[in-house]
Length: 359
Image (tube, rainbow, N blue to C red; front, side):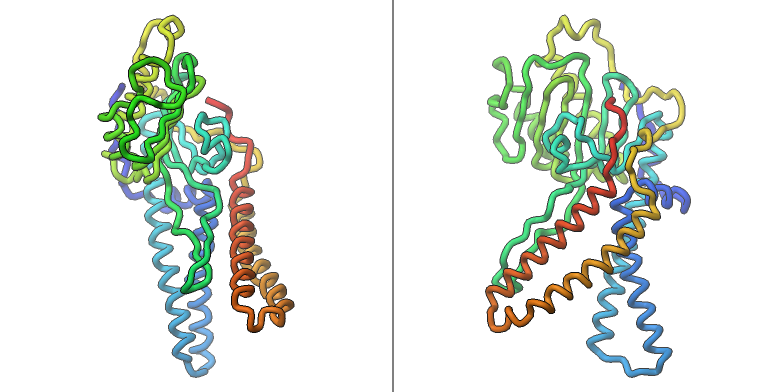
């Protein structure tokens, strides 16, 4: 494996690079639009109230302050994420790698990608036939919604990126293999679909993979090896990306040795990470990918239409809910699920496209 230049990772990026990240990342732009509104709306309201000379209500001031604080924290997170993505872009540029951002990946060999429950948030991959790819996936499923004795409704915690490693083998494997590394102590050689007496994932491998990716699943089928973890790659740290490169190469080499027939492999040749043949290139534009202006307008429409529709519906059934606490909680729960479903549908629409050609 050739040496990679990791110096660009963690380095700050300019305004143009940050804007390019937003333009190429519909979900990030969606969140950024909401965050900007959380800053602008309270600020405008506060200035208007002060200019009118009206007395400031303590509760209103506290509410505006909370919105403003949340918006400022959100802007800080957007700034950090765009800086990290700018570093990943520079890393791809320096090493001649393809860069993929917020793209469906239904042709990948992992169940999470095939079903559309995950998309590629950001990744880099080689250009060779036996490609190697490392990056983060993003969940597109609805968060868990349940009942809470205190508040009535409980929504699952915030979403986080999930690291994934992907490798293309020289030939199809003899039999598919699925290894569940989501619980400690699963590396006993009984991987689903495994062939032969030797376990594919040894206890030492399981320990290393778990330390890097958290609880994980490993799927090998056709010519692909895909590991899906549960914690972010954190591409701002060069040591994380370096470890990912080593692990994906180790998984591919072990799959070639244990699961692919020697006759199908042919003369063994090392698979370099970088061809170093020129600047990086983004995956070809996806037909159906949304323009940044369309994304912003869709978010604004969502923020206007959904609250108005909710207010109209709730006002029409308000008389039915008086004195019926259980029914009221159920209605609120249904409303929360519907709102989350609408947001998820819009997010899928924003990232929809035919995707880059299969590599």
